[in-house]
Length: 203
Image (tube, rainbow, N blue to C red; front, top):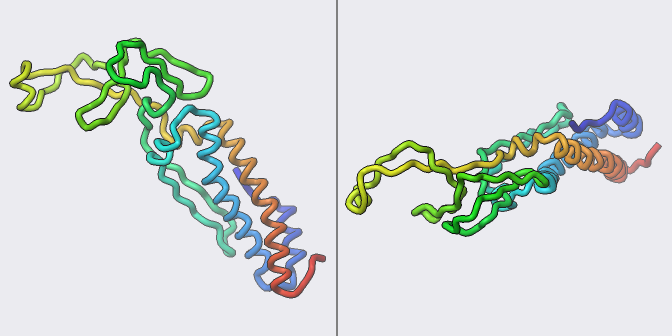
């Protein structure tokens, strides 16, 4: 959680008391810089905790920001997204059909063996970690001519979603600290900017 302390709010209001709406402008601008920092720091901190590929993280993430305003200093950042395929984390082997046991690391430092899984490339070109489900599916008409009508269904193994990773306590703590530092620094900058534009000076 990031916030502007009551002490800071009171100090800004005192310094900018002679500037109409000055305190609200300074505080809302500082808060919005903090929210922007949350967006950029989240990816960095997620990848410091989880062994996820940056390209997959970016592709599977949707971020929405509710900015602060002079009338409402509260702001929020929303992260949403589906689970990212396990193959997009740290997985060995990388090549399909090697016969080697699949080892995967989602959270750094925690490697898991998937003894029944294998790496495979689908007809679409998509590569992933799969397991056989034991249930049968219908082959396409073309495939029926090659071998039987049925084939065993495959299930792709998935890692975590972006909201799950961002929600990690270590990630939250680090992102909050960076955003809070940005806000604190930006408050001072906004005070100077507004006073210089208004022709005043700090009291």
